[in-house]
Image 1 (cartoon, one colour):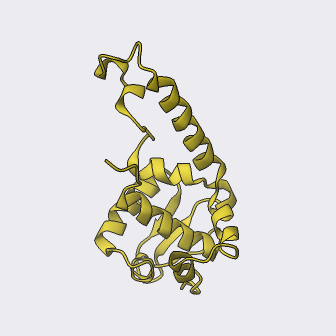
Image 2 (image 1 turned 45 degrees about the vertical axis):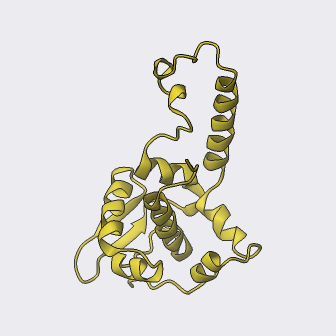
Length: 155
């Protein structure tokens, strides 16, 4: 078992960071985002539907269409994006359904997992897309280097 985010959540975060770098209300074509972020256009399209349903992005069709953030990057948390595409954050099943484990009433790990989940959720909620963009200048990774490309937008 591995505690890691899904590909869907990773792609959603990368697409949202792309849009955040453009700025609030600026549109970019989904196919360009998919190409620049090295992801499947079809998969990104499905993710976009979930992000629209969560009111994190808006979409426009047609030659001058594209997608854009619905609010500034400083008002969208990593938690907002992750839960929009993957649902609630749960480290272990017993936190949601104590009945799933016969040891739930006496388990010494239960409090540990509750606190660990709380800390993780607090960190995800307190980190905005704007925070991640600001960190670009201090973190040197291949991923962030790829984000430094100037995004293409629709005028």
